[in-house]
Image (tube, rainbow, N blue to C red):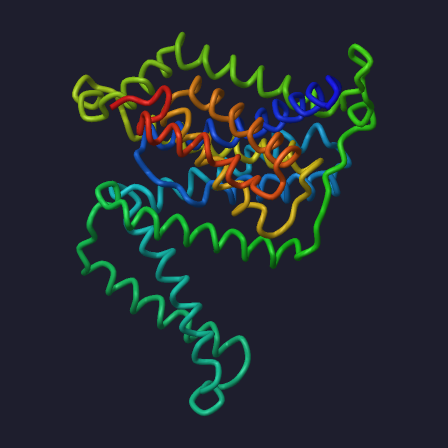
Length: 346
């Protein structure tokens, strides 16, 4: 194999690792700060791509879709974190949302018998939904719910449920066709480096990851908010004891994680495409990044993303029959040597 082959494959692996860093760094921080296993993180990646497509169709601006799609998904993440991943606050709103959802399901399930006991049409549907929602709401008010922060199984079930809801909602809104996000023509060119032509868009991906990585590092290491985040990662109980509002820190980190995942969805949609199921394809890769690097560590997320990107690219190029083994082999090796990850703490 020529030197050109190794250069191109290394470049492709680094650029793919840059994309994985955007997804994995947010998940790593959510793990480290909130100790929540967020299995809906891949859905933020998917929704970022879909929302960007809608913004591009409406405005014709790819550049505008980057921040707007990421901010929209961050808002969705905040709503999810405040209402469902926190036991304190917004109990009535949470119960009302759950009651309304169950009321709609009950109304849909009783469609077959409406004609016998109720007039047909939307009036019957609204009536059954309202009655069922009120009944469920009153029932939920009388149930003592175990705090979700102390129950990992509930975290897993809740977030995987949201992952399926997000996926179905995306299918209903945007359909099941494979779509592509078309970047500006200037980024579709190639640049020659030492006789090797490198796609300019992948160079852009690497540059974005570097800028965001440096910005996150400066924010976490040089600001008061970053100090609060690091204290919460190290010992949340002690951080609360010295006056840090860990609830606000958690909300900020969850929104940041959703923002980064959605930004990755917009950027990655140009060469991965946007289609149903992409969320569950990206989720294991994000977890591999976190497991290798260690939760709560930006440096670990960068190293983990680079390792996964290179392993995936060289595995597919050199050993396509066992590419999944080469992809997850570094993760297994790290788990065997250091279960907390390269930069994780005990």
